[in-house]
Image (tube, rainbow, N blue to C red; front, side):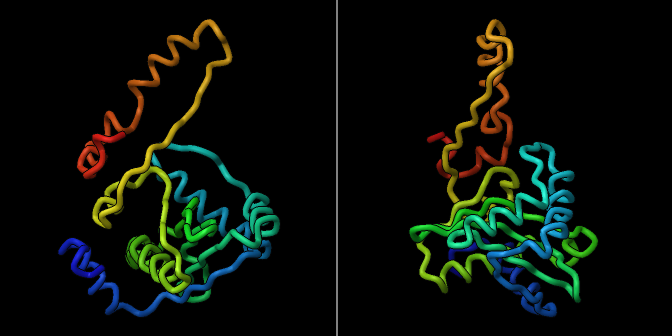
Length: 192
């Protein structure tokens, strides 16, 4: 993997490996810390230009309880506080990275996005997983990790059936693939 990563990314990991280690753990049941995870998710959600679902502490507690065989919460701590988390589903050799949250008071200085990615990849490899899939947004680091794009279908409908034909036309121009210059730099962008 080392020779496949770009020079900038290799340099970033050399610097990260010189910093004090960030302790992390993997949990299925996060009910005791669901409120803390939701607060980190909200910080990340609020920084994003595009917004999707607004998750709740009940969501995090419930997904861990009802999908304990598949749900994995990766939690990173700086000192005694949770500084980052990732929610992933693991099934049939694939890790699907669904949500992430950061405490931006420490995450930018500690480069926690790259720490989380490194640790997720290590965990996936250690557990014999063959595929890693992650969601939309934040394409620049994914490009540096040499990831490929996967098609994503978003369905939307206006409440007025009369406006749906216009709505359909407008949505074709609002696709992120059309407007995000980073997406066009992916080797398989033309396939989407």
